Image (cartoon, rainbow, N blue to C red; front, side, top):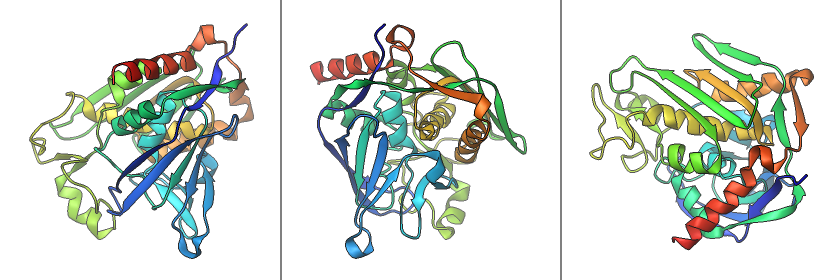
Length: 312
């Protein structure tokens, strides 16, 4: 039986921009990587000229307040990694070296779409090794106040059901449910932008956050309306973006998940916490190599990249 191959980039590609929280410029280069290397950040531009390799793994998460950070913030870390990781995971890229010369991944337009475009420019390449998946065997749950997140066994592939409930008519109660594959990621999640409330801006600035935020990279919410003149990309762009964040955060498992993720009023901390809960119970998961007939993940990723190249 044929197995799904691991996938990397065909060529290197560069992306530049500013960090939404730091306001600092950063350049990142996505490099092809060898089989079984996974997603790894190469943090450059550090004092003393010492570079650091930081694997994108949940065990190296150092903070989850407003964004996800991997690495030691005192010696070299990378923040706001979730949108880039979502693009890589959503398109089925297993192995990539991410060289970055600043402390924060560029926010771009607040979504994963610019990273999807960069991956399409680079192209993808199948590798001579089978992809390993993380299969959820039993339900794990974490709860923080009224917010909760769960991972469940699921018959096929990776499904996400993400619900939010804000006490403002601009958002209200929204739910996004999606069976994740490269086609659905491109169509349903990639363009969903980050969002924030205007009433929180001054408080965030005082705490050192949102220093690079603008209407170019954030959906800004007033008391009863979206401030951005173009409005939202979907009526439920807010729950779609929370789902996008979950795809990126959950990729820190280190392997594509075969299971169902459900959350209510979740965020980076809960996404991370449910991974911790899963890995804390050795009977709750196993690693498997799934047949292409069942998942089709890499095949879909290659087809989507080829289609994009033909229509560029």
